[in-house]
Image (cartoon, rainbow, N blue to C red; front, side, top):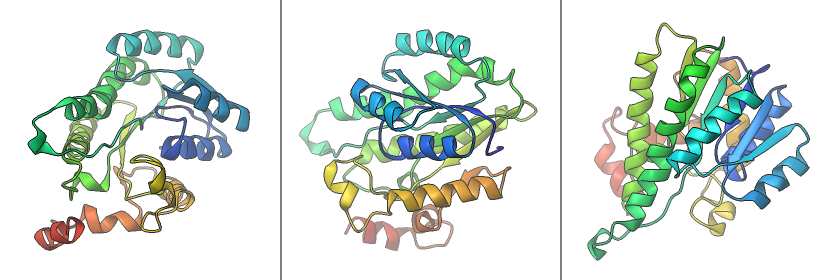
Length: 247
């Protein structure tokens, strides 16, 4: 992926990693569009970052995705990069017998990216130097038991990314997976943004951008801090690491 001169669409761009990526890509000379559900947050992003375009989108709504996809390529015909970042992370107690959280998580974290990617692929395949970036998680490879469906959806995103990459060979579309570690955002609530055990957001973004710039052909973007999760099985320490993470 080239690091500059793109027109980039980032879902979940009103806060956290999505907003920080949008600002970083804007600084590199890209045209950036962010989406989200919260209109006020999107306005704040636009106001703070002249040059970022905000569009409201609920990735849980398949009809909204279809309508949005048609309009966005009309408004931004140079669109060549999609970043599937929108997601939710909610704790679950599986023994309570309810599936509402699981179903909501699957809709947002898995169906949303699949639907939006499918809707935009015909356009992206017509653009030179196109890319689809998927945001999974280190927890795709070593799950936290308190968040079973979140971790399962991120493992599914990893698998989907691999298959999508294989099917896109021979086309202009590159598929890149970003697998963040635990980062100081509000993904699980306000307390996470100041948790000293989490990687500072600015550090995660700067290392991610450096890796994207260093290796234009990368399949995965893995900051050093996520290696503990990503390579637990490969390094023969999965059970030990799982016990440590869920101790």
